[in-house]
Length: 279
Image (cartoon, rainbow, N blue to C red):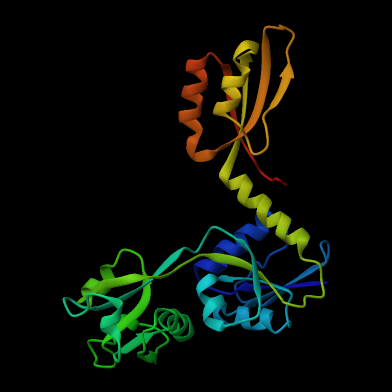
């Protein structure tokens, strides 16, 4: 039976559970549940602290896990990422008092507070900069104000929290993180069905189906507008001067593609949502 680690709280948890539900798996109904068995699919879900998941999977105690790239790298786990799941995006940056730091080299010999010490240490080592790392579990932005550190390395979204603490961003991006599906280095159970289902959910979210009628003489131009993932499906119609075309199109391009097709001469353009997919 495949043993899968799922974050038990936070944005990673909500999004991972939603993906599993969309993929047809049995998920927990009560936030207090820490273990759910899906007998139909031969899979067990363990709801764990997001920060611990990479450690469990890397040690081979669990076969597969959902976690952030930041947590995976910070854990220095032997687990391997097999898919970017497209949610939980975050950017890690350095920040310090306004006007004090201009470049990464200015951090040399300084104290840097962070909740991701190994991630930051590995980044700075690669850049040839030596600092004193101060590990904190949260509220990193107040470390400078309280005299614990000279600068911080933390997740940045709008930067408002840092500015309120009197800090400004400087230096290069440390990491752009997102949720990953990770697997154990010596996994004993096959994870491919789960991986295919997760990929199917991503495709279903990202694409829609385009169906339209197109003059046969314009099918090459229409296919260039909607090339699909591999190739559009072209079917004959009763009127031999026309063909029916079906293709996958990015959901973000729906209206633009409809306009292009209509101007080309296509008609009866219909758009359908995808509930599940295997590519």
